[in-house]
Length: 266
Length: 289
Image (cartoon, rainbow over all chains, first blue to last red; front, side, top):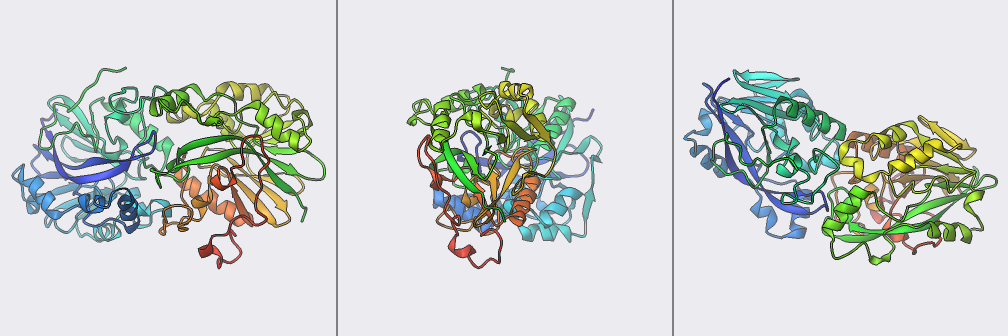
């Protein structure tokens, strides 16, 4: 077992629709630096600087300042990486968990990186179903598809020793979660398969409206509910140590492990 | 073309964020919308679509709703968010019918508000998709809160149960069409009417905004898509394919919970002779009028 750490680097804010009842609320957006391996590995690349116009309209309806507040900037990515003393050009490997605009913010700006994405994800992102088009930034997806150092994989893949990509569809058709060997065993960064701790602890009333009928809450956007449960049950069979994508308990710059929040089952 | 008439009977009403009907769109707008059963007025058999809503919510759902709206006590407008058998009786009575007269119940899907009563229709054939029965008995955990297993068990004991798989003509001029996505076995109902073939979209098409996403009168315009899925959904791709299947099969689509069709509990509603045509859709050739 290797001794890697995951370091969350905040790259902006986003809004999402909570489930019960459906309401917009602000959430943090992170990218993760994996500390330890020989190669410098980054998970996701920040938030795209432009919103889909329809998403922008939806946000502006609620709060006119929201589109501006939630726009990603390259500077946030640079500043984030500076916290771990890394420059964007030093990054060797970028893992794209999925191609939504909040996770695939920048491509060519990482001048020496090699990108990894699932085939199902790239195919879908190049031609998304109309109802979910607004979550993608077509320019970034095209740039990624043409990238000379793009590796398109299909299924699980150990990208460096001790860091394994797990194909975990449901939220999008080719989302991949990242299983990292740490001093506390395997920890999975679940990306948007698990938005927040409420998904992991649906019955805890301090995390949201308590739901006792399910062991897992799906993210507010998804493609296939069946796939979500399959993917979730699969990663929880590997480990119960899961890091959600957009939870407020996650502290920028604070190494994982230890896990930011562990609640007893209710 | 046989001429059936589709008569909505409002048997309950709900009050929720619009985003429940149009997935993620307009979460800040609370709307009242009707829950209806439909009587298909025709020459021979008495056919209804869906069977009504019982006077309580599935326990898991009730708990969550109570938590979310502690002050509302399920009474945004009296008791109308709950269903009731008297409302069904009253509505059928206004058409000169009793539940015993019903020959066929087409269950569009078995969410609690669409199949609340079973043995109350002793003489009816209940026609339902196999995938919906299976899913209703063993749903993905997140969807456990919208089913009433006891009603599905009751259905399984009903002598009139007919489980089908796929598209089927029920009587000449009335057919069901399997349209998964909202649930794995939702069935739309095709009815030959004076205005063309009507497609009852049930909860795959909750309201007109789902199928006319770019009309500003219906909700925040969504110009990037021709379809907004419902909140409750098992599969987006199925939803999208099913919407196109409905659009191609019929001349117009009737949504399951269109707020403009509110008439009050136990009352007979009306579908406009040609359902609402949004201005920007008028020039579309022949489809989804």
